Image 1 (cartoon, rainbow, N blue to C red):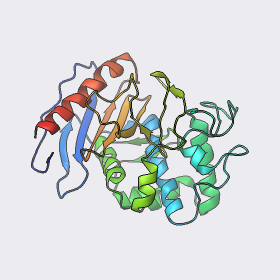
Image 2: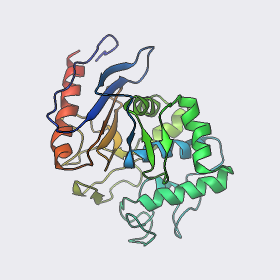
Image 3: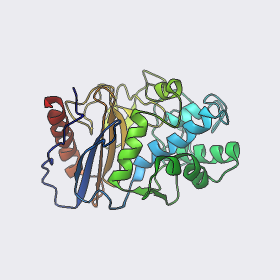
Image 4: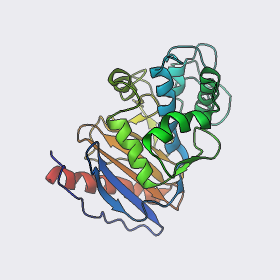
Length: 278
């Protein structure tokens, strides 16, 4: 599929609140294919903060300041465990719900511990490190942090598309580390995907969820199994489809709920149907 000369049509979605959507190809002089709604409006990203924070961690790994397999968090856990939600932490506390690597336990706490670990390793405050190695280099003009690396960022659809392009065609880290980040870490683990229930195979990479064969899911029926990304409780998503070289970002003024669960798969499928027909 070649989307190099294609501009996508607006995607219909009957949602009774303000929302914005963007679609971009991975690279090119004019990569953006669709901006719908106010693509420059700043919204809370909630957990879509995690793929952004993960980029900062991966840069530290790439520069040799951090090793994925060095100890971090509870006994027996590593930086890799924290990024892949297998360190054993509960969702939003320091309580432990299992041994490292035993199950997929989605955890805000794990990313907060990761942020503190990066501060010790780099000598920067986390926000300063992110400004230095991610926000500045990617030219993100609206992205700003408010607290936790797990869920504290705010930003626009336009900036999220730049993050998506970085995840598809990396400039901040090398090919080998990027390949590792977007492939399953600790395969075969069961776990809860928040908002969507228990997944027999709850696959994650390093800071991004991998779609694989999950059902139900917030992406579309047309989405490739290799699709990866994140959604947030602020009513936000960012997905990257490496088989098509596309990313899409969605932000809204309404917290995540049943309307998002109903609308998001159709929005994604409408995007991919257009792209596949181009």
